[in-house]
Image (tube, rainbow, N blue to C red; front, top):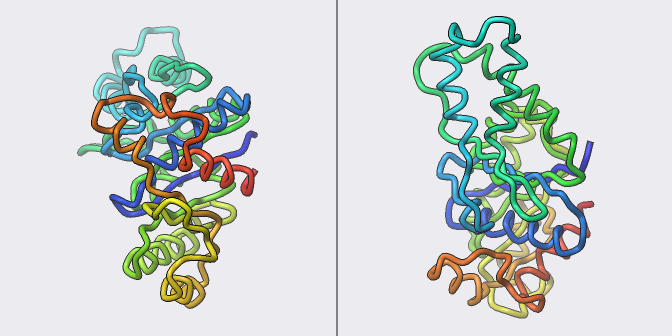
Amino acid sequence: MGVRIAVSGKGGTGKTTLAGLMIVSLIRQGKKPVLAIDADANATLHEALGVTPAGSIGELREDTRRNIAAIPTGIPKETFIEYRVQEAVTEGEGFDLLVMGRPEGSGCYCYVNSVLRKYVDVLADNYPYVIMDNEAGLEHLSRRTSKGADTLLVCSDPTIRGILTASRVRDLAREEDMNVGKIYLVIGRLPAGTKPDSLNPVLIEAMKEQDLALIGVVPYDEQIAELDITGGSFFDLPADSLALEAAANIIKEVS
């Protein structure tokens, strides 16, 4: 099994940005192929990577549940679902993208979800690196992949409220036994040149009080803001991007 890194945090803290930056950094380092999993219901990771999703696991799950009786005779249900998972994979340059999509609707999804978990894990085992961009909640880690993640990066903005929210995400992961390994804090949206030891002393004290391990900071990058406006991908970032360098340093620490 390769290295699995999950990224979480409340909206607006830069979790999708961090996931996208890590994927680009890995590919530029020759550490490919990377499996990118967008597990946020509001899926936007594909935009950062400059690809159009082939489909989503949510659509596959809904369609299979409604039409499970129509699976061709002679094809085992699990084999059919595995084939459909492969169809949902979007191929990029040096990476593949799997979009989880919308949560379950009404009705029973137990069988389909069980098979999907199995084959998402089988798929992920074929990649040296897996980067998962998640919702603020963590229940999807156990619901959609049984093997969890080696590392959970919890993103926060440089505020006390953000630090407290990050600690609650950390506590939830531990209390619910979400099958994650080490848990670290990442603070984003900081002025260029900000180092972990030059953060506001109030924030440093809050991290100590909450027992949060800071693994890195990601500076605000005007080049990323420009790409967001123009619709460009993170692969258009120059090699000297400060945000890209920060993501590369974080990967070095966790892998």
